[in-house]
Length: 247
Image (cartoon, rainbow, N blue to C red):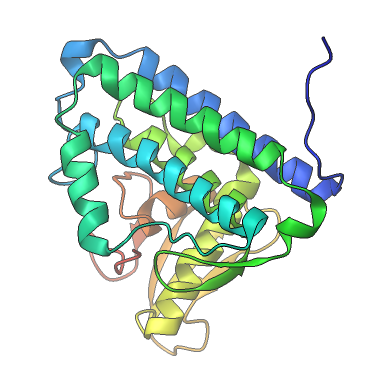
C-alpha cells in the first residue's frame, strides 16, 4: 500500500510541515520519557503542571485543525468559542488521567497532520482567523503549531532545551516576539545583541541612545525573550533582566 502524501507541492510549505512534524516527534519523545506519576509535577510555566502543558498542546492541535477545516470547507470554524472556553478546556484537560492525556496528545496530533496532508494547494491560501483575531492564510497555521510544539517541549521540564530547537525556528520566533514588543511599544530602550545568529545580530530598540543591552547566543536570547529561564545572558544595566510580555 502506497503511503499518502501531502497534496501541496510547494517546497517552502513542505519544508515547514517537516519542521512542525519533527517538533511533534520531539515533544512526543519528551512526553514518553515521563512516568505517569510525573505528569502532575510543575512545568516551566508558572501555575501550570506538566499535565496543563500536555492538555494545552493537545487542544491547540484540535484548534488549529479547525482552522484548516475552515480553509477546506469555507465554513467559518473558530479556534475557540471564547478565551474563557480555551482556558476552561485546558483546566479540564489537566485533570484527565495520564492515559487520557497521552491519547489526547497523540490523537490530536495525528488529526492535525491528516488535515494538513489532505489540504489542496488553493486552500492553503484561504484566509482564517487566529484566536487573537489576526486574519492569516491557512499556511500560517504550520508556523503557529511549530512554535507551540517546540517551545512547549522545553516547558515539560524534562531535559529539552532551546539548544535543541532548530536555528531557523529560533530566528523566526525571536523576530515574532520582538515584532510584538514593537507593536505594543514595549521595546523602548531594550536592545538584544545576538551572537551566532546567521542573519541578524541586533533586535529591539536599535535607535535608542541609552538602551539596556541584553547579550547572548541565539538560543539564550530566544529563551529570554520567551520568558523562559536562561543563565547565559548578560545585561548592561541589571543583574536579573526581565523580558516584556510576549503572549
